[in-house]
Length: 102
Image (cartoon, rainbow, N blue to C red):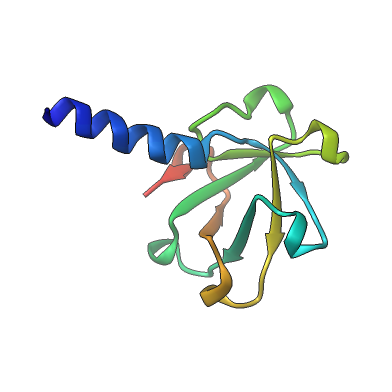
């Protein structure tokens, strides 16, 4: 039973983290997730590393590749100025090894 619960939790988190090819939208209504960027790593739900290479953006990694076209993206995000409006709080890191859920 415990393994079943852990599997369900992993799948729920995995659905959120699955998309790594990301497109920034200008409209909140078009976004899959509303994102707030925090200055503090300890406040983040997800630590994000931005890569220049699409091949590095793997599911469940926290490594994001920004696409130029909405049709190429797995995930559309809208950045909000207010933490209370966000579905996901992220922190951008300079180090690939830090990427992922906290």
